[in-house]
Length: 61
Image (cartoon, rainbow, N blue to C red; front, top):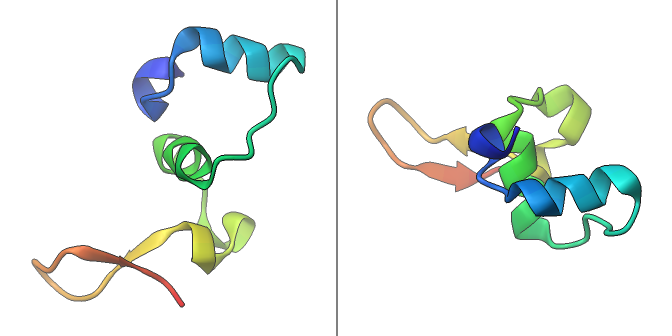
């Protein structure tokens, strides 16, 4: 999971045990992207969407 999300293994262990909370938006986005969470579950504000073929991603509004 650490490999997929680019979050450290100790941090993920603390999340699982309840010692840490996931409150940083950047870390939330890393976790959602790494797990390929669908937009209908996460909401469009937390997931980037393509703006067109070959163009960079932008935040959905």
